[in-house]
Length: 122
Length: 162
Length: 93
Image (spheres, each protein chain N blue to C red):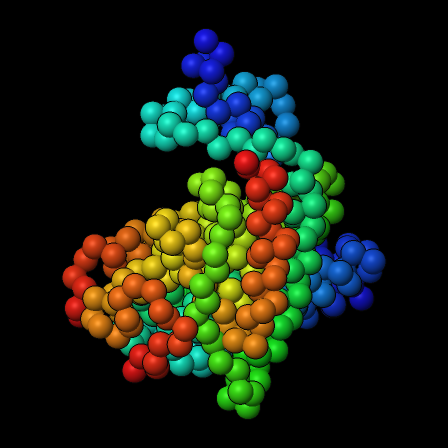
């Protein structure tokens, strides 16, 4: 692990913190994803991974790479931005598709008047 | 003439910067990235006739700062709710939110903002009723989200896009 | 000292992200419905992409970053295509 030993402590601490924060949030998201009962609840779990889960890891990676290359490395941030904006688009489409399918099967009332959450779908 | 040549100036400029960030900052990459961005602009103009350029740039930093704070806050909330799942009496809810915002680009940005924030998910928008259906993870937060959309995000997006 | 801290943090992240990928994998197998599987695929590719990034940090190489970028783009296109299919495809499973 020679490349990591050259990193000064003031940089190592935030990088380690961000990596651990990001990965823990991703795990919580995946755990909730397995645990929650209805599809619409599960729709919220990946946003945990796509917002600060990705953000933490990407920031840490950008900081470390910038130090090691000796110039600011920004392309990590671009990927992070890409993930943060594309995952919501997927989730939105999936939410609409699920609603469409639930309505077609009569599990949800057709148009308005949906104050109540849908039942558990198992 | 200028609009025929560069149909989407803002998007093309951002694409050029993106190209240089991905590779490195040099004249060669500026020219290559610029050419690609122009090509992409022409391709896009044949797909999407409507322009989506913000009219008011001053509000954009404030929007980003607000969004950042909200995402941090709701990350903490949702993570805690998932960890205590089964022990708390959390109930999710569908919510109908009436909207004043009309611009399609503004609505698209609002959709991404709401879905990117943990705890809320945009499900569908109805043009006839001019309202959106939102799914909230924690039903107890209903009033909070209604207030945030009506008083914070909607006015900002109206200022930017309308 | 800082090498130890970073090695520990990155090792922890590798284990945790691998676990997150496994949890998403269980959801892909369990379903119960097609939209759950697509959503699980989405979660799985985020976890794997982050795992690539973290491994790249450990090895100090930029090549794994390129792989992560490809995963991100492909995953997005795949999920969008599948979600579109759920709209138009067979409604009743």
